[in-house]
Image 1 (cartoon, rainbow, N blue to C red):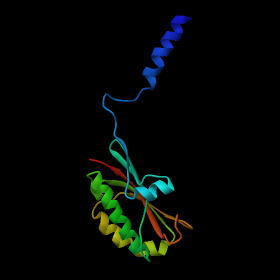
Image 2: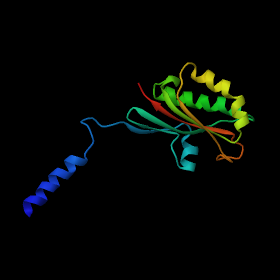
Image 3: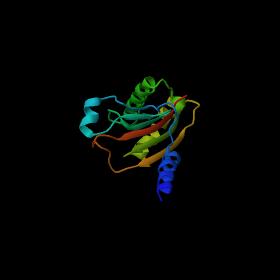
Length: 143
């Protein structure tokens, strides 16, 4: 019986350990630490070569103005992680105005240029702040 217990104690950790000899990068990325702390999130989070970006919203009276501002914030994150828009592999756009988003699609296409990332467009009743018309989540795969 003692031999069996010792065998399991050695075998189970060997079967469940997925690490490597090097530690994987895990870090939050902040754009507005005070606001993020108040709400309780990080604007982005890097795990290894993947960066997950929380809903970026912008200021302005139109979807186009807010989307332009959100892409400026995305540029700040891309700069921090030394990446470019072509490294965005997934984008989810949430909007309270699908018609306004359709009108802003040229801005979106100009931002990404020839790069086509996987994208989803989701109509919602409301975002965090009543004046928010659009928010984007993205996943970045670092080179």
